[in-house]
Amino acid sequence: MPQMQPKAPGLPGVRHIIAVSSGKGGVGKSTVSANLACALAAAGKRVGLMDADIMGPNMPIMMGVTEEPKIQKTPTGGEEFIPPTAQGVKVMSMGFLVEPDQPVVWRGPMLHNLLTQFAKNVNWGELDYLVIDFPPGTGDVQISLSQLLPITGAVMVTTPQEVAMQDVRRAWRMWSQVRVPVMGVVENMSYFICAHGEKYEIFGKGGGEILKTKFSTELLARVPIEIAVREGGDLGRPVVVAKPESESARAFTELAQKVMAGAEQLASAQPATVEIGKF
Figure 1 (tube, rainbow, N blue to C red):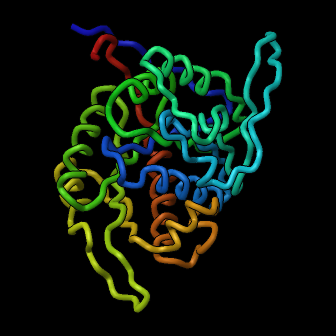
Figure 2: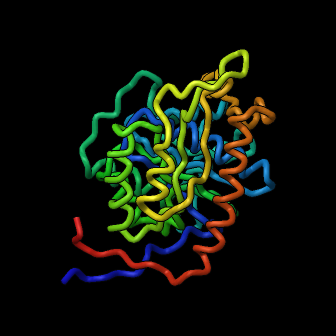
């Protein structure tokens, strides 16, 4: 019988921690994370964004961060990072600590050590929401951060086709095993909007609805493919900031509203526990 431990202790000053996850690469987790963070900030919330994709840290580019984190002494004589702010969001990423073209070739223990630094040695200040952009998979990063941080809930990102949903289902069960509630699913790249306003379902349709039904959860948003989304990621101005009137920006704003409502409901629920040795 596995032993049980209390949920990880909270971060001082941080109310809610939201995991953005998938299990699948290439479905747009970083795009969803960046735009969710910006939409929460636009709603007047104090927001941080942790780039936990250590092997592929893209948040400095996607958020248009122009300065590196500062390092300051703590009252106990240690050191901590002060994350820079862009688009009204505090951002911390491995991308600040390596050269742009330098690969991060690390094994599990090194990843865990860095994630511990990100979890314990970043001074986020007072935050309403800390959004964590997770890498693909269900491995070291997901397990480490679920043990280190009291994650309020996870937002699952998929594209409509079965090959993406298969990995999302695996990741969904992983979050269940570490006792992190799933808030719902975002169907990204739901359809393409051409210059004439026509919609084309390039990657099929209905994936978000299938997952909604299978897991008895909520379809939080359907985000279309728009050129402005790609441009915003490349230029460091997420579409929520650059083109708030666009259909994709409205979808991200709807997502933020549902995340805020769901986080408040989960925060009032009984604290969860994590099984030691489950993995």
